[in-house]
Amino acid sequence: MDGIGGEAASAAGPLSQWQHDVSRLYQYYLDKITPHAVYRWIGTLFIVAIYALRVFYVQGFYIVSYGLGIYILNLLIGFLSPLVDPEMEVSDGPLLPTKGSDEFRPFIRRLPEFKFWYSFTKAFCIAFVMTFFSIFDVPVFWPILLCYWIVLFVLTMRRQISHMIKYKYLPFSFGKQKHGGKKPSASSVVTSDD
Image (cartoon, rainbow, N blue to C red; front, side, top):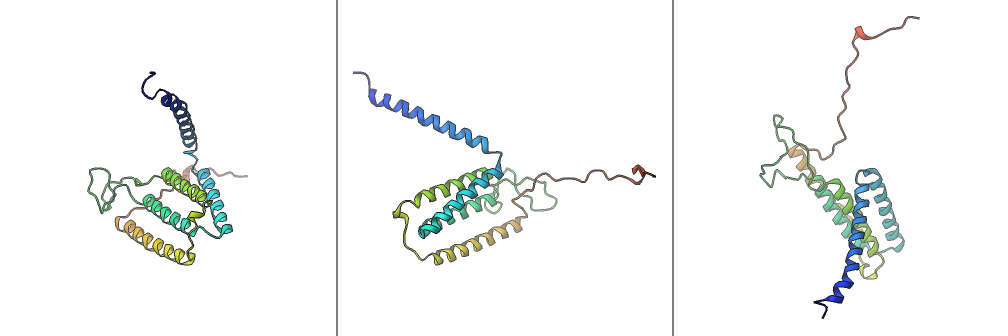
């Protein structure tokens, strides 16, 4: 008797090692592309275009697209929301300043940009794969789904924007502020006489 699960354990060893190696390689490439936000989003837009062309040419899978739209809307709300919502929680951690005299605290997202991008891209890849299985092609009248999604988007964004106005935060930063520096004074300006 070799022990409990001798053959099963030896067969699982190489499979487990291969899975671990693939996982590490995948994480390595994710780590490599993390600082390249523009290129990541360009690649994602390419995937979105391929998905849109697939749905357009197949003329189906509208329910998959609707579910994808709802999921993307949920991701967008997480991306635009602060980590600590001043309406819901009282926390000892950093809060959004509500008065001009409050100390500045940076905006911390509930869903960071990289996780937003990763979930967004993964959702489109999964939806693309789903378009190859006819079980997901439920016959629906797509204009109704589109109208309902637009209404849902407008109402959700209106609520989110009113929350931003109420608590005076902007979820976007446009890089480091640049100062004009020292302006030359009249005495330090050199004129050349020809």
